[in-house]
Length: 281
Image (cartoon, rainbow, N blue to C red; front, side, top):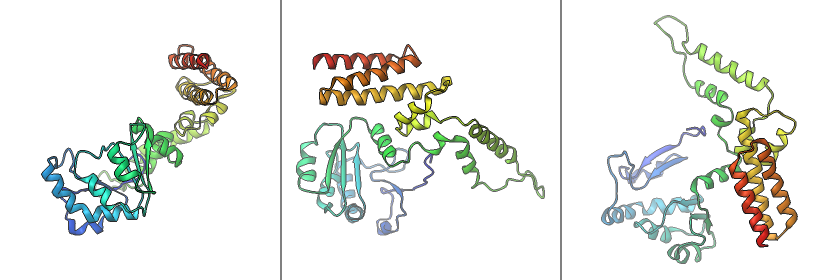
C-alpha cells in the first residue's frame, strides 16, 4: 500500500462467522463479496440472509469505533435497517452524501434520532478523502513526497539475494546504492518540495517558498494551483461577506497565477466568475 499500511482483508461471503472476533485491525471488510471473488451477494434473498448473520458483528463494530459511510445509498439491501437497529450512540457515525441534505430515510431513521450521527455533504468522494487526510496530516504519502526514500524503505524488508550458492553477493546492492545516491542528491539540492506542500494543502507556504526562486517547469503547476485555490477560497468568502477588499485579494492570486503561466485558462475562468459575483453584489 502506498500509505505504508498493510491491512488485513476479509471477504464476509466466505468467512467463518464463528471467528469474527479474531479479525485483525486495521482491516478491509468486503460485506457482499469482491468483484474478483468466488461469491457475490446481489439478490434480496441473499442479502437479507447475510444481513441476519452479520447482526452481532455490526453491533460490535458500531459500538467500538467511529464509522464513516460514503458511496452507499442505504436503499439497495438489508444492511441499512440492520445499521439503524444496531447503532446505539456509543461512537460517532458520519454519513457522507452527494446531496445538500440527507435523504429522507437516512435523516428520519438515522441522523435525527441519534445525537452521535452526522450528515456531511460532499460532491466528490476522492476530494473528501484527500482533504480528510490533509487535516489528519497524513497526506501526501511518502511515495509522492519522497519517492526515493519510500523505495529504500520497501527494500528494508527484502533479504539479501545471493546470485549463486555460497556466493555472498547481493544483486540488489547496486539498486540500493543508486537510490541512496538519488535521494542524497535531491536533498542536497536544498529546494522546497512545492508539489508536497501543494498536496498537503499548504497553499500559502507553497507560494511563500516560491518567492525569489526561479521555478523549474515541473514546479510551476503546484505554485499556480496554490494561487488559484487560494483565490477561489477568498472569492467564496468575499461573496458571503459581500466584501470588495476580499474580491481584490482574490483577483491578485489569479493575476499572479497568470504571471507564472499566461495561458492558465483555469485562472482566467475563475477570475471572470469572481468578477461576475462582484458585479452582482
